[in-house]
Length: 164
Image 1 (spheres, helix red, strand yellow):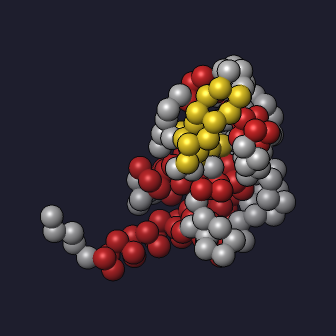
Image 2: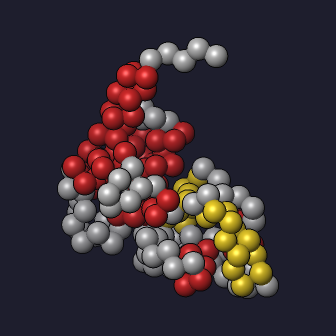
């Protein structure tokens, strides 16, 4: 069955069973390899993407549950030459060790910062708790999210008040 997804702002047609996990469609059909297969049970967060503004575990999200809602992957946030704010913060804090969990961590943090650009440390910890890092870089990851939040606040202050 052919389904059209909105992935990273682009319509993408895929021929897949509606029960297929979104992760497999992203990796196998669309060649977007940022989201990783970790546990396949929605317990580690390595597969996290953003669906309609919410962090979603793509290994347990069937294609049929996505519909026309926009999907964003790590590939949609920035590039090597021009990383997004959160990606730049992860780089600055050296938040990756093996790197396997990082795309999922970045996507979960991105969803948080889009809803709450100034979260408290407790809010960051609670939101990020679902995603696991076996290398133990949690403290660097938390610093990266805080750094990105501070960068976003600084950018908003520099822009000044908006008059409409």
